[in-house]
Image 1 (cartoon, rainbow, N blue to C red):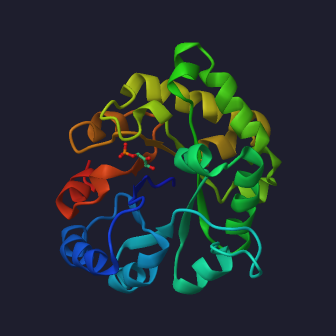
Image 2: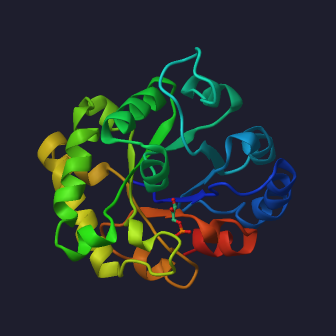
Length: 249
Ligand code: 13P
């Protein structure tokens, strides 16, 4: 059975001490939760603190990026091998902020996805269109290119381990979420791409998360949509109370 995932993406927020304080409050509040998987993706510098703080709980820890390759002369990079060693289980790949500010392309998204799989990490691979693309009716073409340029190159066995996050760029950090209808329709399109490439059974089994201004007020209507299998949450994941309300959508 496909279990929803509620994942927090902390982006470039929190110190190790703040991470420990978050978990002290958050852990007991979600201790009984079994209806969804809970994931928190922290900055690299907080992973060790987060893994230790979440040890023995129902909260899994993820990173926000990784380099392909195991070790080497790659100043400033962190590999899947290292993330696995610190106790990470998930990693966000191809977030639009990485594409926008750090030159991430579909080709590097594919390399990072393969690296995550190689080291037993579940990649949460992000897709999404910009506002001008949405407004000019190019959303499906953009998502199609991102899918074909990246995920379509995986083997069926590899693809089975992937989680997808649809994050319309215009909805990220803007307070302007996609409507449930719009998100559902876009997820259906992505699922159609998966079905065409990997078959209907895989398409039905793949979890597609929605991200972009998800908050405690709009989560339940978004999560009620048939094609939405969870959320990737930025700002509203930073406070234990607000993220608990999201987990309990
Ligand atoms: P916000 O929830 O802050 O809009 O961020 C969404 C996001 O980018 C999650 O990866």
